[in-house]
Structure formats: structure tokens, C-alpha cells
Length: 115
Image 1 (cartoon, rainbow, N blue to C red):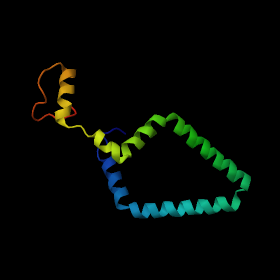
Image 2 (tube, rainbow, N blue to C red; image 1 turned 60 degrees about the vertical axis):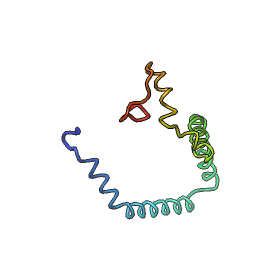
Image 3 (cartoon, rainbow, N blue to C red; image 1 turned 90 degrees about the vertical axis):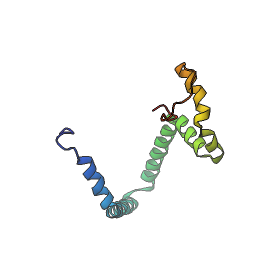
């Protein structure tokens, strides 16, 4: 079904999850607890070690392929770098002028990111 058939479907889903968030979280916690208990009762130590090894391998693979993103996000979170990320329109105007090939700065009403 296309967007025209159900234009408000997404809105209804958002409202449902917002209204029932606590109950859904409670159910998820209970389900996780049941699975944890079931796994502890039925899983041998060798199976647990194998599961943990698979998890560690998957995490290492993710870190390996996303290392640049992980490093950049960590750099962004550092308080000393927060000021470096803030660029004023005054500082950005010459850069944008050089890119556009114009001599003027930002016109009033334009945002610093060019939108």
C-alpha cells in the first residue's frame, strides 16, 4: 500500500508507541529476563563461551569497519573539541564566498549552511 492509501500510518504508529512506551518496555524487560533465565538453565558453559566469542567477533568486525566514524564521534563528544565545531557566520562567509566565486558575504535571511 502506497503513501496515498494510508498517509497517516506513520503518525498513528508514533502515537501508539508513545502512549504505550512504558508497557512495551516492561514487556520487553520481562521477555529478556525469561530468555536470560532459559539460557542459564539450558546452556552449557561451552555454548555460553561460544556465544560470547561470536558476540566479541561481531563487535570487533563492526569496530573494524566503522572505526573512522567511532573515532570522529568520540572526538565530537570531547568537551575541548566542542568549541572547534562551532563556526560563526562571520568565519564562514569568506569560505562560502570563495566557493561561490562572489565577493560578498552572506545575505540576510540565509543560514550559515547555505539553505
